[in-house]
Image (cartoon, rainbow, N blue to C red; front, top):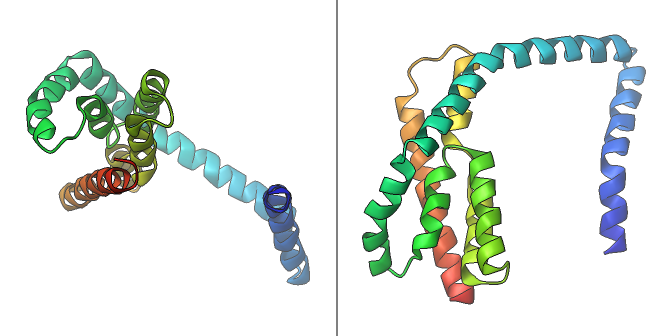
Length: 176
C-alpha cells in the first residue's frame, strides 16, 4: 500500500518533468507554450459559461418543480417487481442530469443506510458507472456549436441505463 501511495504522489511531478525534458530536447519554448495554453483554456472556459449556466438553471427547475418526486412515484411499483429498492430511484434519475446532485443523493443514501449496506454499495457503484450525460452533451456540444444532438443524447442515455442495470446486477450477485 505504501508503494501505491508513493507512486500516486510521484506521477504528476514525473509527468511534468518528462514533458519539460521533451520540450527542452526539442528546443521548444516550454514556458511560452504553457502560457499560450493557459490563455486558450481560459477563453474556452469563458465560452462554456453560458451553456453551463443554462444547464444549472434547468437542473434547479427539474428538482424544485416536483417532477423528480413524480417520477419516483411513477417508477417505484415497476421497480419493486424486480426487487430494486425505491430509495435508489432518485440517484438513477439525477445521475444523467447532474453529477453534483447525484453525488449528494449518493452521500444521503450512504448516510441513511450505511456504506456497507446493499443500497450504499449499489449507490456507490451507480455513482461510478457513468457520467452526467445531459451536462456533457450540453456543455461540450454547445462549446463547439453543434445544435443537433439527438442521436448522441439517445446513445448517452442508453449507456446510462446499461450502467445502472449492470450496477444492479453486479451488486445483487455479489452482495444481494
